[in-house]
Length: 321
Image (cartoon, rainbow, N blue to C red):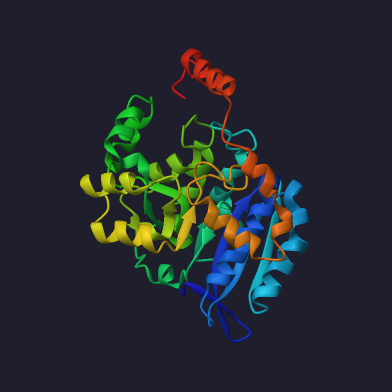
């Protein structure tokens, strides 16, 4: 099967965002940046899988897309969240699990690029669709969990032995090129749904890493440049053999996707690389009014009291948070 869909004689690359009502403005910024960074011959079929409470995003999102590329299309999938009761931790809502529904929700789609809504696209993503995917369930970037100290910190989780074979290859799932044909062939969707009932610290990311072991292709880190990582962090990736020096250089100097996986620039202006997100949003007449820059500038992280409360929660929790 092809990696794209042809509509009205034009090839459209398929992309999907999954979100709930908490991210309706952010997905507009992410989709806009995708289109603004695309090459002149690149058009998209953008799927949005969202909860019922987020369905009002359709009209403004259609306008965001139309202004930038009338030849790209929006396809909405509004649904009750089948994972509403799934484990939630670290202030991440159950909306994160929606991507696990894609194999059944998009039965005619072979391959599709999933992105979290907290991304800023800065250059064409067309090379991702050229990734060899024969026998692979997904392609993604190796994440920070692979660093030795982080792996050790996670190693006493009761389920971590199920990920033992992923050390050095554990992926960050915020940007994931999914081979839905292979996922369906392996019958993984039912297993994914079953595992949402477990208490995994990294939630659906852990599920993908567990179930796709041995069937993952790896993207260059420039396609999921974690904003919270600075030079020193990337140096550790190189020292531990997770990234090459050239991959580090590309990720730092010319990231294709900046992923704000930690602090969010729309909440906290001084987030690392947050100025790039704000520069982009403020340059877009249809986006700047969606966000409160002054409020973001005033916020500098949790107060001392909030930090103390979090520390006590971790101390007295029965599980490792």
